[in-house]
Image (cartoon, rainbow, N blue to C red; front, top):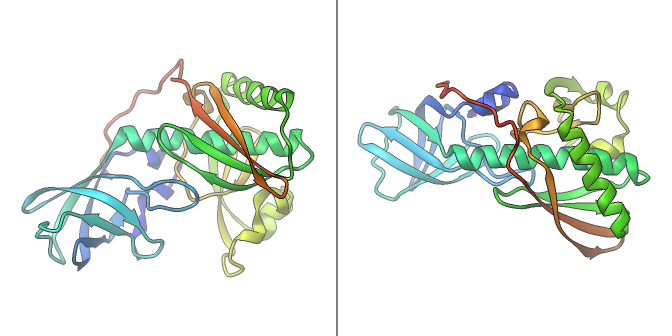
Length: 253
């Protein structure tokens, strides 16, 4: 099983490079013993980047898998089991996903509190725009304006984002099960990574990548809504550039 380095802490998602060993090769996919590359899942798109090995740099175009993480590379890659490699993720895309995913958590938490327990029943996180499906709800212009204003108010407060490992019983004692979508998680999963914004503005299980302070998001900009039937409405958004961007070091894990 591949060790997911980005899950070690909120701060681990800011690392851009890592060293690893190839443990399996199958055609144009390779498995590493450890990785910073985020695989498709939880509504968040995969990372891209480069693996640098004995024969030079090879582009990583797709990443999938939850146990062994499969990194898709060029057909002529020449990697072999046991090769030592250095991975470098496309930072601009990773950071955009971190900001977008954290914004989704923020708005999902606010919508639940503001609109009678409206649940997040789906989301898609991309670098330039993202969307959230809420149910049950029927947004009017005032509701949309209030949600965006509330999100931007919290962003201006620069609330911290933290994570912790909790059991199902521990999180269920704090947050309503319909807010945390506990019914969507396999019953066999008993230990959960919980991501929290501020003092429970949002608090739910998530294996995605996130910023450490929502001040890094920039303001939310509403793009549109769309009915998805049976009381479900899709909220599409993007993010403005942050007013106080964070500076980073190129950490190698």
